[in-house]
Every structure is written in C-alpha cells, then in structure tokens.
Figure 1 (tube, rainbow, N blue to C red):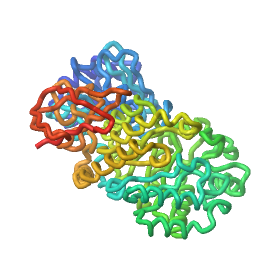
Figure 2 (figure 1 turned 135 degrees about the horizontal axis):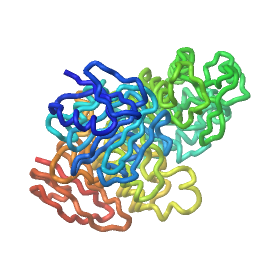
Figure 3 (figure 1 turned 90 degrees about the vertical axis):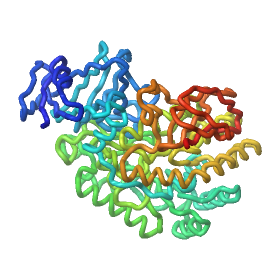
Figure 4 (figure 1 turned 180 degrees about the horizontal axis):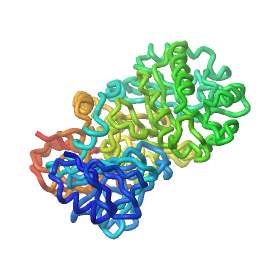
Length: 560
C-alpha cells in the first residue's frame, strides 16, 4: 500500500526508514510544520522537505548540464540547482524533475523544484502544490532506482530513427555560419563524400529561411531551387534532410500582427501586448504552444515544408525555458516556462526525423536529443561524457554531443583554430563510440593531413561497432535504460560513483577517451570480468591500469 507522507525533516526520514524496500510514497507537505500525514491525505501547501543523505550515498538528476558537478553527496555543501518554474537558467538543455541515488532511492515531482545540500541533508522545495513521489529500489542501486522511477514516471515509448546512429550526422551551421545557401550546401555535402565519409542525415541550419523569424520559406536570394537541392542531396546518398526551426516570431511583420490578434503568441496580462523574448539573434515574440491554435499552425507549417520541399524533419532549437518571459500569461492557465518548452518540443512527435536541444519531462520518448554548444576546450570534452551519462539518467538516451570539435561561430573565426587540431581529434574520439557522431565544421577544411587521417580512422572504428550500437538503441527502446552509462550504473558497490571520464556503452563496451590536453597516458578503471583492449591486451578486473594515449589512440575495452 502507498503511504502519503507530509514532512519537512525528521518526519520524512522516520517514515522512509520504516518503508519496505520496494515501497514508494507520494509526499506533499507544508514548510511551516512537520506533520506526518495519514494514509490518503494530500497536503496542498507548497512543499519543502528534507532527505538525510546516507553515508557514501551519491545523487544524480535535475539538469543535463549538471553532469560535471554530479554526483553530489552529503559533503557537497552549498550545492544547489533551482529548476522552479524556469529550468535551465544556467544554460538550456534537457531537464526532468527527478533525482536518484547510488543507494537506490529516488524522488519525482510533477513540477520543477529546487534541490540543495545543507548540513548533509538533501533539501527539496517546490514552487507549486504538486505531488512528490519517493521510493527505494529493492536492490539499493542506481540502476534499480532508474528502473523503478522511469518505469513509473517516464517509461520508454520506443527508439528514434536508426539512421541517426548508422552514419555520421552533418550540420551546416559552423561551416556556413549566417550564409546558408544552396550552392555551398551542395558543395559541403559533396565534400564529405569526396573525403571518404558515408552520407547520413543532413541538417540545414539557421538562416535557410526568410529574413524574419516565422517566415518559414527558403530565402529567395540564397536558394533558387530548394526542392531540387534536397533531391540532389538525397541522390548523393544522404538518408534524410532536416531544417533548423525555432519558436520565435519577428515583430513588425504581417504574421506577427495576425498571431498577436489571434493570441497565438505568449501575451502579457493586458491581453494585447506580447511578452518579449530575448535570445542570441536579438529580441522577438515567442509562440505560445499551449494554445491549440498555435500548435496546429506549427504542425501545419512543418507538414507544409515536408510536402513542398521533400525534407524529412526539423532541428527544434532555442525555445529554452529562459526564453519564455515570466510576465507572459500563457493560454493554459498556470503553465510554466518549462511547460512551454515541452509544448513546443512535442511537435517533434509528429515528424519522421527530429533533433531537440531543450526538453522538459519528455523522458522515454523516441526523440533524438542534442547537447548545447560546447566551447573547444578539454574541459568541454570531459563534460560531453558527464553530460551524456546524465542525459541517459534523465530519460534522454538518444543523444549527440552537438558537434565534433565543439564551439560557436566566434570560436572558429580568424587563425586561432590551427592550434586546436589535437583538440578536434580528441573530441572526435569522445564521439566515436558514443550514441551518435555529428559534424558541423568540416574536418577537411581545418585539419592537416595527419589529423584528417586520424578522423578517418575513428570513423572506420565506429563503423565496426555500428551493429552493436544499433543493438543498444533497440534494447534501450525496449527497456528505457541508458545507452551511455556510468561505471556505477553497471557495476555498483565498487566505489565507481565519481568516475566521469570513462563510460560504458551498453553492457559490454567500456570507452576511456583522453580528456587532458597534451597527456600521453591515463588511468583506466577496469570493472570485474575479462576485457580485451583495443590493442589486443586482455585484462581481468577489477583493477586500475595505466594505458598510453598517443593522439592516434582511443582506448576501449570489450567484455567477454
């Protein structure tokens, strides 16, 4: 039987200790009192309660971008993440109102919440009166916690398109920047093929469209025959062609005036003025996708583009929670900015191919996700691993680390990139045996012959593992379990909780990229079992070894 518990500190701890291991609770409490609720009682006040962190207990969850800061534990004083109303304030990406621990404990809330560590205690605060479920898995492990909370609150609905995993993904953003145009898009597509790369999914990025946001038609000055361009890309062998998309609408346009009149945009309290959204291109209005009329327009727009130009889907970018002003009054009463994120990104459920950079409470859905831009640093390479592991725990297993090499437009202007050639290779090695590989800057334009050959070698290596990676995709679609995992997830109880610079792909593949600049060796933790390394050496774990990491080498180990 489920117990309903209202608590803030000792009351919560006492009842949790009394639970049988597989028992879960729904918690709602008042910050003004410590009162244990009776069975069937639900308190409607804003909840604030505490969970004493156990000795050697580590916690994960909340936001993908917390990967390098997690797991947190009893001594993580002053660690805090506030997702209330606007998750992603520190930089948008995937998020979910869930926490889970290495001792099998988990927390789920229907709304965003704040979590912090104070005096060895996990303090959770919700902004709105929302039920908070807690539980402890029978086996007392991180894997058990994930299986239990995901099964109850974000079960798998299948996997996304296998084409994302079978060959590299190509995105035109960094290569063409603000000048996406038909001629160079075709030249870039051919360039990849001429350099020995198998064509995969092709994404045409920001500025393919008209000069104003909301004008979702190919730019007439830069595209003479967009449908013919798509046909040529597919004739080259590209399996799908996708277009960049976002929820902003430029003001002082006929479309804006129409949508404002119809209240299809996020409005202010006066019911006439639109809330202003600030994002990297500037200032604009933003779609209110909680309005069925807006969602229908967005869906019709996507369908029109696919029909008119034979494109296959969209990269849904921007639309982070911080893009939705708090002064806005959404169509659906009490919808938070995080709710708006989900409303916008749900359009991806209706297209064959999709990529999402921000998601909220969309765990378990068969959607392809991307991590936000990373600066071209070695810390960012390490962060790719940590964030990739975090993404899977939050229910977003089908993930790419944005682009090989990382970076934004400004990072690749001028002559500074030559110094980052080794970094580009190390970045590629992190991608190579991860769920997906995505290029945005052509290696053949920026690397010398030696570095180009290493990239080709990494692509050949990936191809040998594609059948295994695809098998992992299908298994994840069935079970919901992450593709990319921490060692703690697969091998609990060995002190692996804080290892974030190596990862498991599924059950049998251990990957240990080099993430330190100019380093020529690294330590690798080998879990229990018999493992064959990339150089043919056989190791029997558990043990820690030192391996050499010349630039040409990506250390990996296959379990027998």
